[in-house]
Image 1 (cartoon, one colour):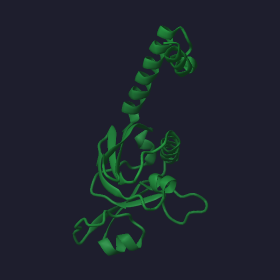
Image 2 (cartoon, rainbow, N blue to C red):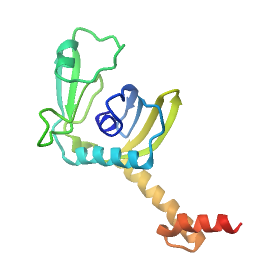
Image 3 (tube, helix red, strand yellow):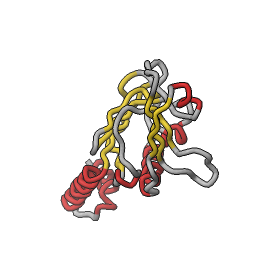
Length: 177
């Protein structure tokens, strides 16, 4: 969420999510599709935070105290007398708080490095002004990357090209036809 906000602007708000041990879905407000550069930047920033292997802190607080402490909340959601606040991602030299602090009900890792790495596999529209990012993590991310590399290698072999030339060869073939 914080990486999205840093890249796209503070108007980006979480609208829903699913977090599982090997994948995630994150819905957020944004009026347009993300560019390849946006996705690369966000993925790089998240993986930089994962590699930092920072502690993940969890505290129970009142909703007002959590928001005052900087936790991001889903506005319009009903919260009880006590909420779980998760802070993660470490601090940069010029930051005075954790990279990301949010109200959260799910379980989490103890350190960001436990995630392994994150690979965004899709970004799409799910409604007017509502976008969705889907990603895989850890071993599932490794499997996804290996499968993508296999597909590119097969395409390169069929085109009698090296993987770095696949896009160029496809464009050339389309222009010929």
